[in-house]
Each structure stands twice: as C-alpha cells, then as structure tokens.
Length: 153
Image (cartoon, rainbow, N blue to C red; front, side, top):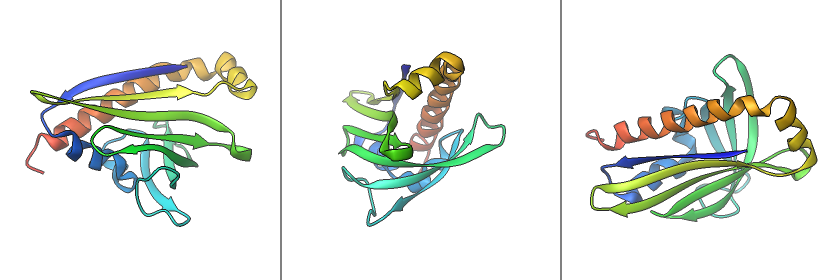
C-alpha cells in the first residue's frame, strides 16, 4: 500500500521544508495528526531523531500515539520519517519531496506501508480501506500548507 499527492505552491522550498519538518506544529496542517513532540535527546529534524506523533484516526475519536524516526532531513529537498511499532518494527514511511521551479515549489507527500507478515494481514483484512483516507489526508495537508505559505505568514 502506497500513494502520493503533489501540489504546486508559490513559496520557496526551504520555507515549506521548515514548516513540514517542524513536527511540533504539524497539527495546523494535518487532518489526523494533531500534535507531536521530539523525544529523547532530539530537538529538531535530523536523521535518527525520534518524535512522538499524536493521531486522531479517521477523525472519529480513535486517538493514539506513535513513535517516529527521521530517515531523511535535507533542507529544501526532502523530509521523511518511519513510524516504528512494537519491537521496533517499521510500519510505514511518510515522505515529503520538494522540487523548486519557476512558480515556487512542487511538493509531494507520500506514504509507503512496509512489507511484513503482520502488515500484509492487516492490509488484506482492513487496511485497504485506508487508501482513500490517506490520499484525502495528504491532499488536505498539502492544501492547508499551501494556504498557509501563500498567505502573509
């Protein structure tokens, strides 16, 4: 299970990257993730840093937290993290790619569910229903981000 959404934004890639990589403020853009904080010794977006993300799944009240590990932190180009489950199992990876162009920046958000037996079973039984929800969530996140960076902020 994987998908991506791309949206053109009239803002510099570095500015958009700063907003996306500030996980403590993601709640202002995401329809499901309403907060996060750096954990351990982490204080910002560097490879290996961990944060705890707080999710309101599907917007219907199933709230939980996950630990995530930053796997890419290249200012103005890429920010990515992997959600880590029980026993350190990698569950999925969320990635943002930034491509500067004459109109500003083309921003792509994507997710990729890792291939493991438990995740394959989840996908077969119920996970397939998340495809549309994830795509809509990515679209909404990017639209909210676009509105923010293209306003007077």
